[in-house]
Image 1: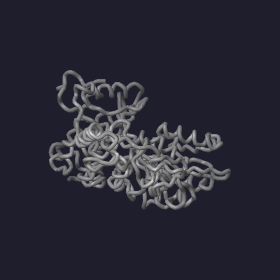
Image 2: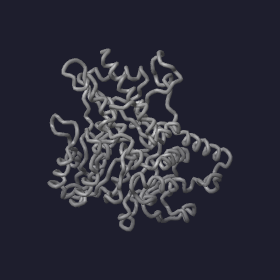
Image 3: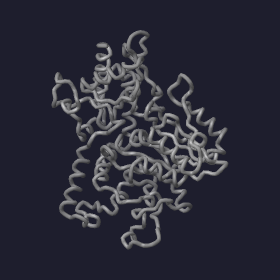
Image 4: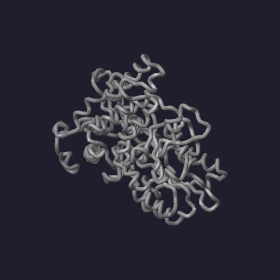
Length: 444
């Protein structure tokens, strides 16, 4: 396929014909215009242009089939399904069975990753395990514009340990007049204040701007300064290649309903580096983390499964695991995250190029937009964030896009996020989204 720099000169139909992953679109359900609030002028039974995988990935047909299979097992076997399963997915070990498929996506060993709980619960679990503040080293270094749930977690963790969040939580903001954090500023504060920083936790991909941080470099700097380094990978997992083990990351957490397509409120996950296996036990033990050989003997003492698996607390839902399994198997069939990332760079580059050719991109008069996501394809994931020129413009544009069957999401007061996902979006989708954007802004 062509390099991203000259894609705009080619027809989107031809680009799709040359796309080796194009057939995977048929593995997913694309919502129809009539169901997503598009105008009656559009065919109600035709697929919409879905550009919102950064918020909620689409349902795969395989996930649907696997979930229906688990419902049948529940209906026909009841509790016996925990130990005897017609498809070899005994519920008692279902979470662990996903780890070999999940590990390559985050660059980890199988026993370093586990599917469990939800993102914020896992974030608190990891903070409880690794945030051990002292009078000298008590700070939490993060982003001021981190997702609200992360900010709440950091503040409550500081308070729970007896520290004033205003002093303990060091929340970095972009420089005045800029939208993204400069990594040299992050490295500079680690170098200057590292001896007082207990935990560093940034987003792998920033939810608002779409900025992809140099996780390896930041992790290395944090470890050199003696800090614990964790990552919130909600917008990174399944989006960009990761090498958590080799980078020396201490821990990481994520959700799976964005680029991993597990469904709204789908099961979360976590990573704990194997270097901690013989050093610490989970602080908040639960029976599902107990060694399987003795779990149902209900022993008095907790003997955790080695690695991340020992951090499990309660038995996970077989339905959410089945939904995630379907998507993970599709990732594997597509060649893994390296293959999807290769297409993603081209697809997002195509979107970026078309947007910059728009009559309304940085227009000096009238309604306009700019792109606050880094232009370097290696400093961003699949998402581009568009910042609109004046208050009120964004909402009108967003409503116009929805009315025309282009599904994206907005962040108040003035940002729209567009995210072409390589497993099910096409170059034709991208071209139509930009054409509709141009028409809507022209109508203003």
